[in-house]
Amino acid sequence: MRRARTLLLYARSVPAGLLRSLSDTIISRLHLSTSRLPDSIRRSRYAMWLEGYSSLSYVNDWRDAFAGSPRLSADLCNINDLLDMPRFMRRIRDYDLVVVLHSAAGDSMRQVRRATAALDSRRGPLVVFFGNEYAGMTEKIGFARDVGAEFIASQLPIESARWLYAACNPARVLASPAALNPTVYKTAEGPRTIDIGFRGVLYANPFALGDEERTGLLRFFVEGARSWDLVTDINFERYAATEWAAFLNRCRGVVGAESGTYYLERDDATRHAVIEYVGQHPNATFDEVFELFFARYSNPVSGKAISSRHFEPVGTKTCQILLEGDYNGILQADRDYISLSKDYSNIDDVVRRFRDDGYRSELVDHALEHVLAEHTYTHRVNRVLDEVL
Image (cartoon, rainbow, N blue to C red; front, side, top):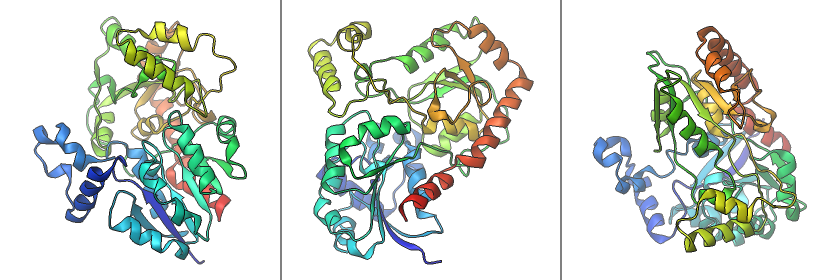
């Protein structure tokens, strides 16, 4: 079988101007890594230039799954690389398929926008994976339309995604939610000394999302842990993939909620208004912002979705306590995770079940079997390729 020649456009780090591009161009050629640095330096703000997107493991998991597909002969192009990017753009017509990945079209469209003219001259279909489908949507939708993308692969529930990208016709919208990388997220030997753990960072401009579900849930567990006799380790910092997997293997459980927003918008109008208001009123509370901008919001379209953070604990057999939600219809309440009501009214029953070793073991076993059967990144890439090739 002939393998399709494929160009994968990704970003090693946030596409954010000349200084970042110079950094990426140099680092990629010197093969520098934060793993070679002392821990004190590795956790400093200066190490971000080396770290790039290493702590956002899902963007690398998608990239590696495409690059490793036996159906493709793939070339990787870091859009921040000042030497590689123009070289690959000159050869754009060599490729049967072009894929723009989340890292290249998530935090900023600045660099990938520069490839518009070259992408217009492609001969094969273009698939675009947008990251952060709750922000910057005017620019993202505009890009998809300007380059005539044949396919938009979305992490959102499919009906929400079709609504969001309705203006991008005739592009087909593909359901492409997060998945599991089982080579990184797997069980390891050793004691699980933490009952409930968490590592992660808060959303930028969190009030603009219109809810505080995850933040409130973490606060609830920090405050209630002693009364439930649970050992918690909850901190707001990012870990690289291997470090995060090791941490998960020290935890019996983690807590979480669906990612994204209940208030999808194509033009970011409410998001911009909230950010402006909070900038002018730095002491504003979430309740104040919600009452002003969301309480009477008409006909909201939800962009709440499953994320990679819900699959990674599955791989390490770490039990999840999640706020009730749909999770793209993939994870089932009280079969793959313990479901906590949004008003926390069933917390006593949740803690009782969590502390039952037998129940917890059956639940994590079922979740892993289910995900390995249908929801790895290899499955996701194959389904995309079935549609586009």
